[in-house]
Length: 77
Image (tube, rainbow, N blue to C red; front, side):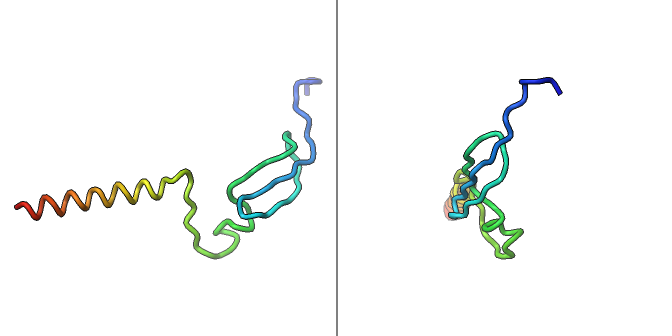
């Protein structure tokens, strides 16, 4: 390894949106995450809809809009 080109590997405080906090090692002193092993469906066994950036809501609006247009076209025939 070349000297002085790699970042320091330090202890990091990790905070999840579910409220879970733990320490690990990383190149940044603090990490904020959206999902961790305490709230991830794979580890908890509970089904949970993970919505990242409103994608699920946006998809549901698009589907509802398509159904509305289909219903209008069928009603006019």
